[in-house]
Structure formats: structure tokens, C-alpha cells
Amino acid sequence: MQDLKGKVVLITGAARGMGRCDALNFAREGSRVVVTDVDQKELEKTAGELEDSHYQAYSYILDVADRDACFALVEKVEGEVGPIDVLINNAGIVECGDFLDVSEYSIRRTTEVNYLGQAWMMSAVLPGMVKRGSGHVVNMASMGGKVASAKMGPYCATKHAVIGLTDSVRQELRGSGVHFTIIEPGFIDTGMVKGVKAPFITRWVEPEKVSDAVLKAVKRNQEEVGVPSFLVRFSAFMRGLCLPKVVDFLMKVLGADKAFDTWVKDQNRPF
Image 1 (tube, rainbow, N blue to C red):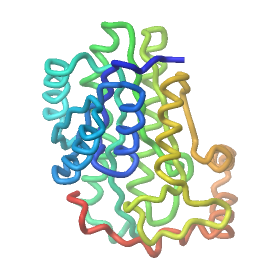
Image 2 (image 1 turned 90 degrees about the vertical axis):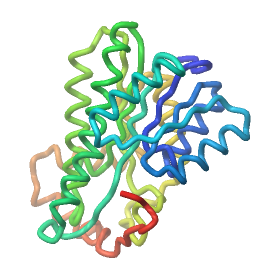
Image 3 (image 1 turned 45 degrees about the vertical axis):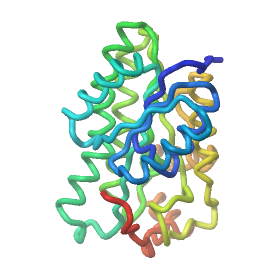
């Protein structure tokens, strides 16, 4: 089991939700936590909370969609805090709606943040990890990266892409000392999915539970974790049978095809 005391842990999208929970969890382990986010106001609150608890915390504004900003931030953090031991690619956005009604901006922004943002951060951090022969990257995917839901097309597409990218890079760097974890949450109780109705087969999961799974995965070098595990595995199995009509039928029976009809956008998020 990996000892995280003194390790530099960089977390994107750490101003609230799961990112904030990750920051607190790793700080309690004695890690030097670097929190980043595009939301300066909320980021300052999280950083202040960490500092008030006498944890080692450092905060930086970052829009992960900006490739140059990602590389500049990694260079700055490694110069001011130290080499990055753990990268948690948590930043993400959600935009629900019928695909034909979703704006070009929304599709591009979702792709740039949810997928390209993780790719840019990996590109910036991995060379140093490989050179040192150690490191861990956690990529936040979703159950939606295994089986898609109606009105979530662009979002699910990015999560499929994250899983594919992580699987590929993990194979390329096997034996390098760098480990990878894919996290696949189900219906998480955060402001990002306000108004959504979870299908009766599952339940809402608190962000703290997902964060606990992230911490455990890093300690044990787990390569893939679903929360809740059974639902994610079941979804992946059904889609893996290559029987989309069966999947569509099950989604309808379970009510999953209507889950995002009542989604309400959080106007307080600067995305």
C-alpha cells in the first residue's frame, strides 16, 4: 500500500464536489495538495478550508481546456511545490439536452474540458513521472463511459474517450513505474446533476464515497473502480454484448432513458 505522506497531489476541478472531497482526503493522509479550478471564488474557499485545518495546500487558477495553461501550471507547480506524484483529473462539466438542441459551444466546451483537459494534463505531467520511474494518474470517467443515456450524448462521448485514452496509455507505459486508475461513478449527488431522477435500480451516491474510492485506488494501484461497482459492471457487460436493442429496452424499463429530462442547470457555475 502506497504511503502518501509528503507526496504532491494535483487535483483539477477541486473547488467543489468530488474534487474538494479528494483534496481533503489526501490532505488528511499528509500529502501536499495542489488544488486547481477555473472558479476562483470557490477555489479560495476550498484552499482556505485546507489551510485553516493546517494542511499543506497550494491553489492555482486553471482552465484545463487551455493546453498551454496546463503545461505552464505543471511547470510552475513542480518549481514551487515539487514534482507531481499523483494527478487527479477531476475537472468536468455536464450539459444535458436533446443532441439536436445542444449548441456548438456546449459540445466543444464539454469535449475540451472533459476529454482534452485530461489529455493535456497527462501530456504535461507524464514525462516527469516516467523520468522519475514513479507516479499515479487518476482519470475521472463515468458509468456513462460504459453505457450512454439519452440527453447526455456529448458528455457520454467524452467519458468513453477518457476510458479509451487511459487504457491505451496504460499499455504504452506498462513497466514504467507509472500507474493509472479509471474512476467510473454512477449517479453522484452534486449540483452538476440537479433535478435528475436516478433510475430505481440504483441510488444516489455521496461524493465523499467516490472520493474514498479514489484514495483507496491510489493506495492500492487499482486500475479501474466503479461506484457503485455492481451497476457499473452490469452496464458494461450489457453493452459489451453488442446488443444495443437490448440495452435500449433495459434503459426504458429502468427509466434511465428519462433520467435527465428534468435536469436543471446550475447557473452559479462559471462554465
